[in-house]
Length: 303
Image 1 (cartoon, one colour):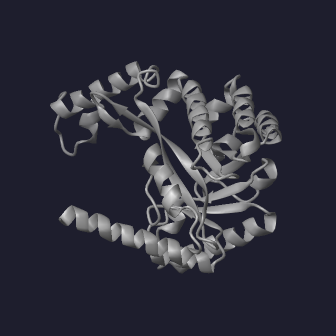
Image 2: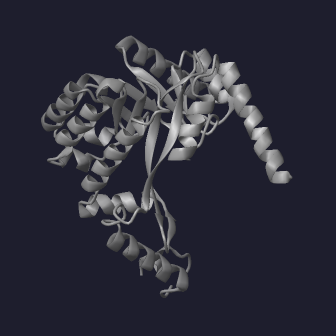
């Protein structure tokens, strides 16, 4: 009936094949999500973050992916809400933290590298969260590598006293805290005074039209300057073009992340990328090498 209501006119939409497939898919996701990790269906994809002044890579974001044997790729937008509603998000979150820590200890990851993982509000209610982070940081030990926890403004809207206590403890243990999707909803620079934030991540929606929208450019410029004055790192997400990258560089943006440099990659491909591109002599060298790689890929596809 809900589907029928979405259809213009007086049509009455019965359970057609597409609708049935959607319901079946949701049922499979709900039923099989809990054991997906044990079956080896989950993996992390990694997207590098490029430091603009040097062109080098000192950090990346780890993103959870699920490939089901019957459904194929299952979007996080489909399974994360179900994980949150069923309580499975806490176990998934611990799995992500442990996997990200394992990759940080790989010999191809340079000392001091920072890996960020996304954190749901529900994960901050996990009684095992602090101990999981503590164990991860102990494993990293002498590598000097760091874990960064990406949270959204919805966390700030929760019980501030309780959230602040947990985040303060995680930071004390050695974790870093990033505010994701900054510039959407009600997030503001004042959030930095409420939580021990180390990094602001500018949302892609602020970057999309930065080269042709003066108001958007001004807003990004103000945010970059504000972050600098507050002593907070800033990452621009969703950078897809050379023009966007050059403008952000001219505005003083420290770090960028997006398809212009690299899409999220499986572990083996990511480690290879770090070996090949992670320690270039300059931003220009990195851009040139990546451009040459794209040409070779296109030639290979056409050949």
